Length: 113
Length: 113
Image 1 (cartoon, rainbow over the protein chains, first blue to last red):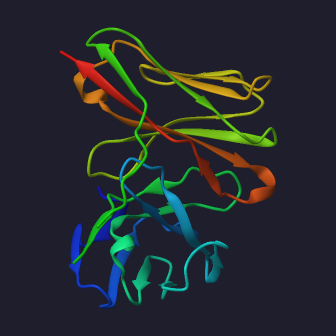
Image 2 (cartoon, each protein chain N blue to C red):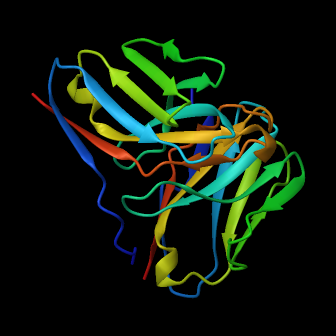
């Protein structure tokens, strides 16, 4: 009964080659988040969607973009991946934006060659 | 590739013993707290949460204690099992920050059989 699904689980890309990671949810939650997590570090929020409203974190590089075509799906686009972008990318959802539990997907591990 | 991450503090316990994982949070205005468990290669999994109007909350084999005076949160795991081996993150949420979570640095729990 997967609730937050991320595809692919592993993604290999080349330096500078655009890549898209996908997330879908069966919870019908209003909010979807994208986090970056590097080795032995806590997840770092990149941005989130509240319904169709996009909210970018101040320190998220312009290289990272996101799309949410409908309630169920959200995409993370990395326009020109650098070696420093290799990480685990986590998608999470919450029902609303007021002190609600965030539920995480299994993550996509990105390798940049 | 990935940059080298910080060295996570590690708690090593014997199977069957109780474990206590501590977390110091930073914002005195935080009023909602969550503990997540993250196994290797997986996304964070919700364990238990607590709101600031409570000092203690119990789940199945887990108890969270909140001390607002010293801004301290702890997770107690009773009768620790090998399946409890993971990295544990605390996260804090401030009401006026919407649903944005601030994650602590994480603690690695290793259970010895």
